[in-house]
Image 1 (cartoon, rainbow, N blue to C red):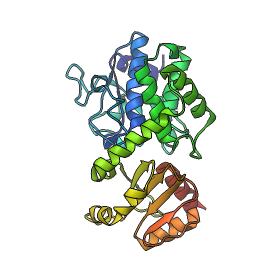
Image 2 (cartoon, rainbow, N blue to C red):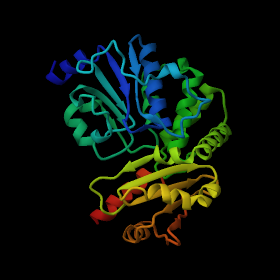
Image 3 (cartoon, rainbow, N blue to C red):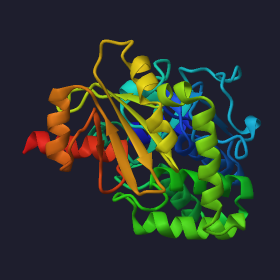
Length: 320
């Protein structure tokens, strides 16, 4: 057995499943809970843990608090536990107290750190540009042929994660595997395609009820990229009309910091995105990349875009 395999065997005696440290969205939450349940069905103890703040995509109707803990388990030692990371692979977005040498597996749908993790954990790095990390976790259930034993609550979490991360199965990063996973999970959960309407309605309520926190709990800082502003916020909502009316207030919130910013407001009902950005230099870049025009700091796209798609397109533009 090589050194990597020996280390993973030793660390995997206690497995902690976690995600990024900045905030937790429905994909990260669903992956943690679903992977924990899969481990338990296989007779292995696992702990789903994150102290990240829940963002608006995690609806109260879907969560069961005891499934994921927000304090590091007292019975575990951070230095000797093995960690499985979901829905993130950028080391800068992991909790600083997690020893990177103790990461034994990773599941992510954001590209950019494939080689970094493959050099550390080899084939245990599952990083693919796919619709949702939840799809990767459902793949693991199918590998073990245990999907028929999945709880209804977990199936709904994975469904919500796939819908949220593929913009209701309409985004360009949606794959056939995402669609197939969605169809199969609907059968496990006993729901049909209309269930998504209920989920997104609850998400909209979460956003409108606490808009400032919804906005600030989903801001990503972009590093080593001079094409886009350093702060990019994202709101995925069924109908953006009411949010657009509140842009003057939103601008005041974001202008409290000296860093330039951009908001990607995804409107699912009208199948578009509204890019909000007041910095002219960045506006010029965005106009060239997406063939849009800013008016009063707002540009409407012809199709909805996820933030990760925006970032990917910016890198392609920069390197051409």
